[in-house]
Amino acid sequence: MSTSTVHLGMPSVRPQHASPGSTLRGAQGFPAAARAELGDETLRGNLRHATSTIQAKRASAVREVRDWQKLRNAGSALKWQVTDHLPELLEQLEESVTAAGGVVHWARDAEEAGEIVAALALERGAEEILKVKSMATQEISLNEVLEHAGIRAIESDLAELIVQLAGDTPSHILVPAIHRNRTEIREIFLEAMPDLDPSITDEPAALAEAARRYLREKFLDMPGSVAISGANFAVAETGTMVVVESEGNGRMCLTLPRTLISVVGIEKIVPTFQDLEVFLQLLPRSSTGERMNPYTTLFTGVHEGDGPEEFHLVLLDNGRSAVLEDPEGRSALHCIRCSACLNVCPVYARTGGHAYGSTYPGPIGAILSPQMTGMHGDDDPNSTLPYASSLCGACYDVCPVKINIPEILVHLRAKDVDRRRETRGDFHGTWDVALQGAGKLMSSPRAYDIAVRSAGPLTSVLRGTNIGRLPGVLPLVPGWTDHRDLPKPGTSFRSWWDQREKDRGTDEETA
Image (tube, rainbow, N blue to C red; front, side, top):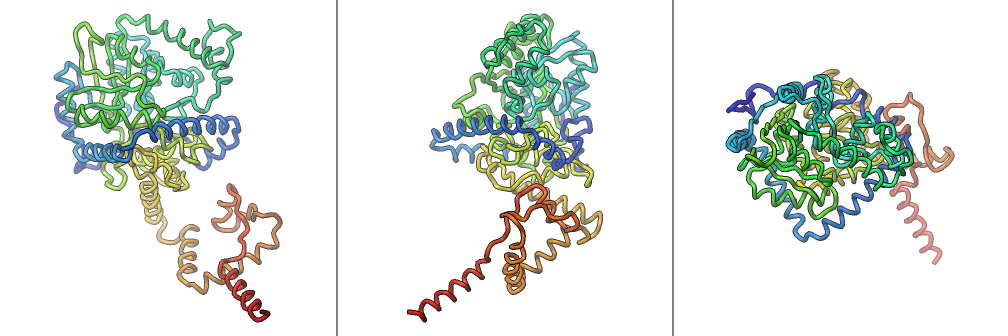
């Protein structure tokens, strides 16, 4: 399946959202899922240790670059160039890949992408395939699609392999098994690898060696084989795919098999080969805190006697055109999957990635997933994701391509509020009533002063330093006190000032 013309960008027909088969929506909203995750002390300890370590490495690597902000500006500008000219660049990419001996397939949604990949694998008689770590294939549930077709997918990335053997799902963009500690990983390996020595320790070197032996057998048994990858970047000018990784297993998958299939989101394009100069500096420092990735593999089409004999590129939309349609939110497509925003987010650090219910967790997931799937009412779990943030802005500060995540979160919240108002009419919900009252209170200096002055004496009768959990019959406030400590208000500034002036006058009279 290949076409010579693609229609994307700003079509007259509204672009479709991601298909229901995508792993972009959880079974429950973020508040309920987060509440369950917050009770897992082991998870919180794992996250705290891992994210703080990655943060420190990133900060050290960034400090070495004097022109870091200029690099960020360049990366942002290049990404805006892509979103502004995506249809033309996609056509150019197809021409370049085809000229290099590859075949391009267009997939409108997850189901179409899965069907294309499964058909290609079945036609080549594949019973097992090796996979390079890929968010796009996670998004379309490719492993499950292949399993249904009788094909076993084997993850070659160590963290992805851990998740797969545990029957789990990834919880981080860069470190999928970040929610697991090494003791848990040892138990997973013992259960899933029957030939493993039971006396194996939980030392990282021993666990890595066990995974190496397990995967080596798969790599060496690849006659007539098929491998599947994603791509970090796809160069429109040359048709080059770029895959960056830390272990080298991905490079084995990209070079040993007879047939290579790459599933790539349409937003992963960069215009020219030279543009990689910018992104290959931004990505490793922002993701792993390294000056460069240990393995950066670039491949263009097919070459006789060198690498795969067939190359198929599956370009995946699956809701990306719907994101592109929104001028205020489309910069979410600029993401280069570095995960820096996850590592600095105070919400993610406490709840982990599973609470977001999507392949894309953390701050970037909170803006990308709702746009890809749409927000379809109060019962839609993704309608809660734009509220999964304190709006502290740390994610924007570290984003290597300057995606203003807090601004998009507010934009999506506004869209959700507008939708609810259309459904129930203006000012009929408790939030509307409360905010209308707050607006009137804050627009009257006298009323506001009275309210602030009286708050201290009214709460002085309560024990302790916090107000504590308030009864559910009150509007809005219990939703705050159920999950946060609400300190009792102290003396207001005006009351303090009046008392200060009074004491000062008394001192002057005494003098």
